[in-house]
Image (cartoon, rainbow, N blue to C red; front, side):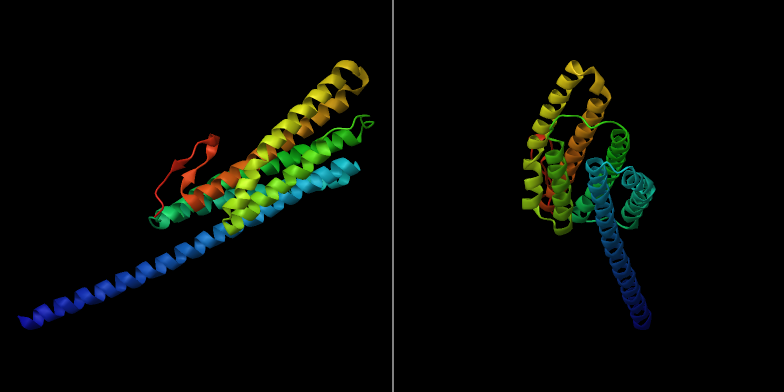
Length: 249
């Protein structure tokens, strides 16, 4: 009888050891996959930042070939977005993540979508550059160069904030959102006046309105990314200027 009990106890012990080893292996795999997803998001962010910068350089230098290069790289960003979506599904199926890991996974899912949309806006900017190259430049100084500078810096800072989970940098991005809104309104109003008073410059003015609005949308999406960084780090939402606490464990 004692021997039977001893064997059962030994079997239970070994089963516990096996389960523990399997659990540890699964946990290591989970964290490896989570790190790979984060690195993929960073790479995607770098690609779309480059696309926006090159689209605006194509616009300022009136370079249709450079704009075409931006358009040609769109599929690479789209492919990474799909791979990241699948990685998120796999991570959620792998095991039940703790609250902090779950926040990171959910944030990367949203950031992934935001970056893909920024890539789309970069293509829009490149297409506007091509269209604008074929027309006489508008004889009007606009805030578009400044908008481009602020937008690219906001995007760069948002990605950097994600890399380092830096909420101070993220809040700096949020602070520039109102500036971009104001610059967009002023630019659109100035161009609307051109459309009313200079019939021969309507097409150029409309293209510049498209550029301004695409830059403003990219700035909004950079702001979304910064909000997700704060969500991951501090376990509360700052969207719509409303802070909501979430579990931090």
